[in-house]
Length: 207
Image (cartoon, rainbow, N blue to C red):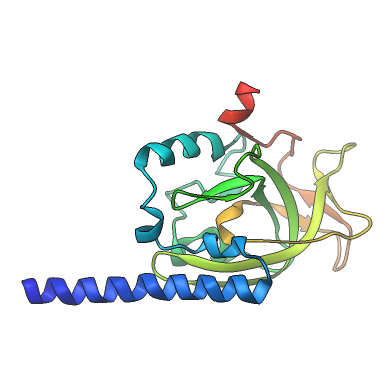
């Protein structure tokens, strides 16, 4: 039994180092040092105390007013999780997604601006460059900024001028049921009404 335990332990350490090295490669490739923190294995991030994690979690977690039966929510743990089960594994070109901005948590590590109130933004995805393992995901999603039409909350509009964005899979909150009138269209139609305050955080209620 001890022999088998040592074998399992060896491969767990190898996997953690693999995730860490790929995270470093991402940070170098995309020119963003903060990307490095997106991919720290849990054994590294667990150096933070559980008290600190709980405090950050309550401040950085966003809550949705949308029904998970109508949209795909990463927080819906009956359908999504980590690695191959992460929502990012289903994202395709043209999908409209919601992602977290400001600050967020990655395995207990604060990423982004530690002092910023977490918020959300919408994007139309152009390409996904993500690698998934059995329990982690690392890479980047790229697209263009879109916003809810202030005159019609069932429409989303591509920003004018175009604004390119990119973010990590750990920022991904949801995929919205939006279809485009035609290829290259700047107007998307949502199957559910979209309100300006789709997500909120505990921290906002204290401000």
